[in-house]
Length: 328
Ligand code: UD1
Image 1 (cartoon, rainbow, N blue to C red):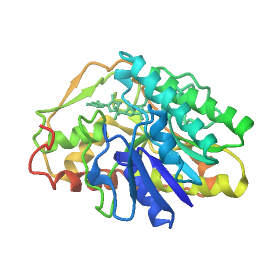
Image 2 (cartoon, rainbow, N blue to C red):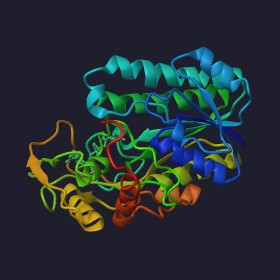
Image 3 (cartoon, helix red, strand yellow):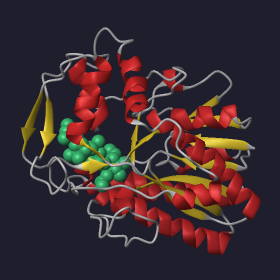
Image 4 (cartoon, rainbow, N blue to C red):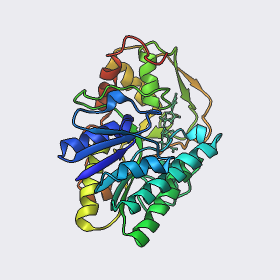
């Protein structure tokens, strides 16, 4: 199929674009390069610079004719979304409506959307399945949930079929080493830990050690970005084959604590990685992990690279390529 990967120059988007290319699809990347990188665009992909906030950019792109698009162009910083919701309203909400309207105008019938475990909010039970109540605790999570609801209406009214993939904690890098772009100003645990291992940061701050968990630190479900990428390809086949939309969780089903991740990072990198326990970060749930049984059943998905060692070693290999922080 002809697939437009919106946000395909970003960290997750580049892995998704690669997976579609490998599966034999014709891939075009649409990206405004606000956080995406030109170095993340592969030979064999077309590139259209553009911004989802500008309907004309989308009109120009979709007029090339696509069977499907993948939408990975939302802002994703939870903390920022609680300070500047306007930014998330315009980009995540209006930007997605612009995409859906361009799809309608140009007869593109399929969309695979990066949703998030942030749609659930604090867990009422674990592991989290797709029937878990949806009570996002951040404006970011709210935008992802609202988008899922828009998708459901466009499915009903305009016959657009969608896959909403609720990622848990995306981590790791392309095990084949072809994607080596570092995120600018990373906010997530693993890249921050790597920056400490490289000596680019003095220490890792561990947010809270008084949670009701086995070692007092938060438990999360880290899932390899190449596993996530494969789920996008499988999902598109599913919605095409079944003519049915899809909402699934994507997690490794394994809960890892911050302390466990830090110790594993020390072992895999052989670096000291100084860490200090500090206070809790606002809005962090104590434990979050998924059941991905539905993804397994419907799209035949099973993580292959989401064990802790592969998550860390594939990331560390990328960081080792850099003598200094490219953004310092
Ligand atoms: C959050 C979102 C997730 C989103 C992701 C994108 C929720 C429930 N989850 O994940 O949907 O896709 O952000 O950025 O809103 N930690 C430290 N020190 C650090 C950094 C992190 O201790 O310097 C801890 C956090 O407290 C947390 C864990 O590491 O327990 C993972 O944090 P992070 O990587 O920021 O992801 P989440 O907040 O779980």
